Amino acid sequence: MISSWGTVAGRVLRKPSAPMTYGLIALCCLIFALGPASGLAPAYGTGDALLAAERAYFRRWGVVPAALLDGAAREALTPVTALFIHGSWVHLLGNMLFLYVFGAMTEERLGRAEFTLFYLVCGYLALSGYAVANAGSAQSLVGASGAISAVLGAFLYLFPRARVTSLLPFLFFLPLRFPAWVVLPFWAALQWLALGQASQGPGVAYLAHLVGFSLGFGYAWLRFGRRRGPRGGPGGAVVGDRRATRVKSAPATAPEGENQP
Image 1 (cartoon, helix red, strand yellow):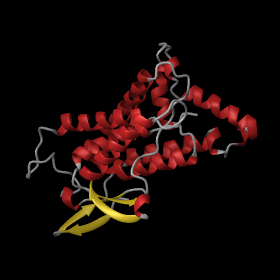
Image 2 (cartoon, helix red, strand yellow; image 1 turned 45 degrees about the vertical axis):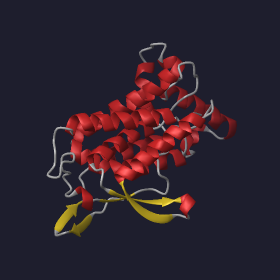
Image 3 (cartoon, one colour; image 1 turned 90 degrees about the horizontal axis):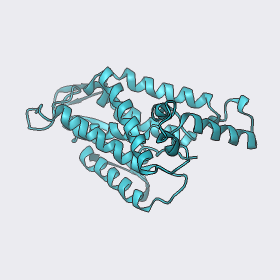
Image 4 (spheres, helix red, strand yellow; image 1 turned 120 degrees about the horizontal axis):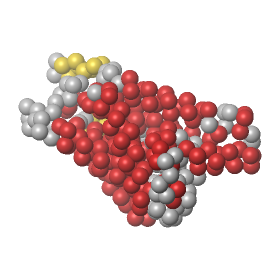
């Protein structure tokens, strides 16, 4: 979580104002609770009926690469609607945790309207990029992690020295603090390695993560690259000295991937 208040070298850091980030989180949670994957809506039934309802729901609102590339007008909207659909509680909570951690500071830096447009456009392009690379697939693709990966990419450029605290399973969950310029490229490298080992079929859309991350970093570079702070880095963060910014991340080092039921 981002520190609400803290004092470093006599400077007070305030909690970023991020209504759009919190609104996106609330909307995703509400849509998930009302859908069949949550198990909370009795109208979808149980057992086989529930599984059939989930498949139909994901196919209607998710991205089906083969259908998207056929050019139907309704299918062209699915890379947006898919950003608000998740396949399980783990899928939802993993994505929303990373949006909460990295979205607030990015939103305050970009501004509410720009951040929202950035989130939707990058998410749309990330899912569309995956669809183009898997043009023959008839499997549904849902989840916000393409857009959230773009937020991570922008965060890396805007706040490269922000301290990120992670609990790493292979180090017995010891809390370790690293700058964003170490953690986020490491995450991207893991996505790239996982992409090379990914098999056909349901799973995590690592390509959508990489496309989103690249788009987010590239946008931030183009948007702020000519604005230099006092020490030659990207434009100064509105929350104070970037070296003093503290961020705590989730136990995992990456947002939960897209679910392909």
